[in-house]
Amino acid sequence: MKRILSGGLLVLALAWAQGVGLEPVATGLDKPLFLTQEPGGPLLVLEQRGRVLALAGGQKTLWLDVRKKVSCCGERGLLGLAFHPGYPENRRFFLNYTDRRGRTVIEEYRGGRPYRVLLTIDQPYANHNGGHLAFGPDGYLYIGTGDGGSGGDPQGNAQNPGSLLGKMLRIDVDRGNPYAVPEDNPFVANPKYRPEIWALGLRNPWRYSFDRETGDLFIADVGQNKWEEVDYVPAPMSTSGGWNFGWNVMEGNHCFKPAKNCKRAGLVPPILEYGHDQGCSITGGYVYRGRRIPELVGAYLYGDYCSGKIWAARWTGNRWESRLLLQTKLRISSFGEDAAGEVYVVDHGGGAVYRLVPAR
Image 1 (cartoon, rainbow, N blue to C red):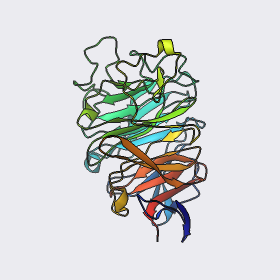
Image 2 (spheres, rainbow, N blue to C red):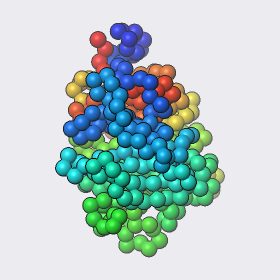
Image 3 (cartoon, one colour):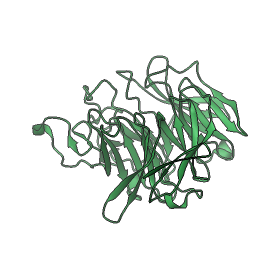
Image 4 (spheres, rainbow, N blue to C red):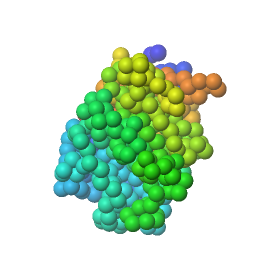
């Protein structure tokens, strides 16, 4: 592996992707946490304190301001944004933020204005708020929630079927008031479970994504003491649900609780993990479907907030193989994807956004 500096790009030459670099897109941001693209519009970056800025032509303009609603910072703030699949016609989008009382709020906007609150979830501690939102290929809204915080899930929320914490939720925002539960949600017939639950056993699913080409689901779940993990559900099972990803029985592929309580039956192991010798907080990304870097097409990209490492993972036919793609000094809070499938990296600590590009 050879380190190269080329035209201001940080580049690592690898066998998989020769000359991959990061090109600055925006700087001077205040604690950026997520990047997406408005359908038919500009790139948008979310700042933790509650602003959404549009990036176009080298300029930053205010697109939305919810700072008066949001509590910040630590692991609280404006954490997620998702556009309705029919946004070009209905102008609907959804926010996930921590309100002034420390609660998780899922709120719908229409035409740039608040329309209704869909869901409010009490948070017992200030950390592990989850925060991501994404529409699946089935048209339903998926909401990732952390286990409620502290350390080790002391309230047992992730394995509690009566709690919305430590879960992946799946709701229908096109029916009901304020929403409906899809009839094929996996636990709707079980009175012990909240019907919104699509999967359980998550600690803090900070970022997840559906592969835009295949529909496969990748969930990066932040670890506790030793292990970070990527959970995976291939299509078409990626919309069927019912999965238990193991927390707080397991941390990655390893028992978290004492061995006598480590019952693995029925738990879905991660496809990838790394220890805290490589980092300390995983940030999920996207399967690359852009055109700028052909060598990366089909690879799942993810990183670590603490170490600044970015990896690319592929299915080799019998196992997942992950390789280091870039070693950076960034505090990677998120990846982003534009309409063309190009991937971006968000630097929370440096207040910047970068585009993944081939070296010049």
